[in-house]
Length: 446
Ligand code: CAA
Image (cartoon, rainbow, N blue to C red; front, side, top):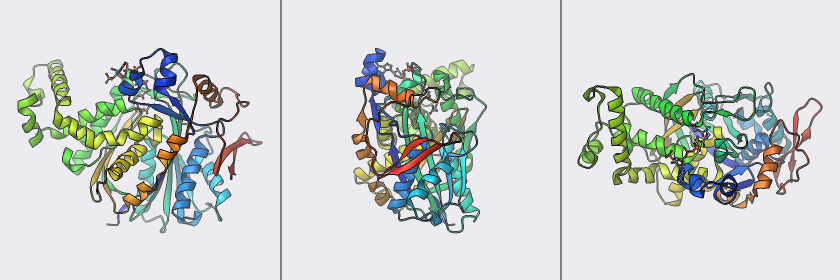
């Protein structure tokens, strides 16, 4: 069967940086380590006044198409995944296509366009749509462009303010891809939940503590569902585990539970038995409460073992490096986790061609999805082309007062149009004011 998967990837970060320990912590009267160690983030990316989900998405897509020498004729569909859309009818992908038509010869009139919504998981769902379109033989040799773009802002003062971020990931989905092949097998964990939602409002209503529990519960279901079709998972099967990363502290919790699940009834559980005992089994307990308590104790001990820490350091920690610097990008987060892990492998000189990734996506509301990916031969060249380190370093570090102004600029309910831009746009798409029907307009700046 022809391999289908991610052929190319580009990442575009918002051009402003809010340093959480230096800038946010003193104003919020928080210990800096609450951010850097507890939440696990050093900084958040923010969009400058002329940036938004369209400019960030179009800039990522332009870089990708330009680098790969593609024309609009090579692209048969454009799907944008976002939970920051500003229009309930016209999809963001049409705006992105309009931008790209300013800089490429030809047009995208032949391309199917859409917008996917299911909180943060819609980026992965758009990958599925592209995968299925190619597998169905409807692509006529063309590739799909999937763009995950978000401005993840919370109301000021919300606990989520510590986890904000903004950026876009563009991915090219093709036959015989250069980066990773997607597995046909998938697992889902999906339920009607009210943990994080935006009922016709820009900033989310969040039950933060509950959202953490729902993430873990749905992820666990998805892993079990994945195993029901792909067979049992084992830690040694996967070189990296990129998970949706609202903040690294969340993945720290998820990874421990995933590891505990994967080692059950394996030689690793046996080898650790002298140190931490065997995992409690429900049938050995009179009540669920006792079982849950015993499992909690076992999990705490497991976390402290060298075996677990080594696995975490090699398989999970590398996926969190970009996220730590940019915050939550909602739909793009799991895709920067994948890129981050692969980049760390490249920098460490590892050859992981043919190795597998276990990818865990999540969207509030709520749904988790787990699938596997196989690293393809062209991965090193693709990952070496990323410029995310340079972009991160070039961001303008803003003060708290500047952050408040930028937050207002991007608040749909405020008309803060008079705020000066903090950086000068160059070779990129920018927001260019409003059209006669209330549409947002864009132009390319040399
Ligand atoms: N030094 C070191 N660590 C510290 C610390 C300090 N001084 N102070 C606190 N910590 C630790 C805490 O112990 C805690 O770690 P553990 O959970 O491992 O114990 C961690 O820092 C966070 O502290 P709190 O739980 O007290 O933080 P909080 O309640 O203020 O906020 C949050 C956490 C509720 C998740 C909040 O950030 C939030 O609401 N975020 C938005 C929702 C979210 O991201 N949910 C994640 C799942 S939903 C999802 O994934 C979808 C999505 O993208 C939004």
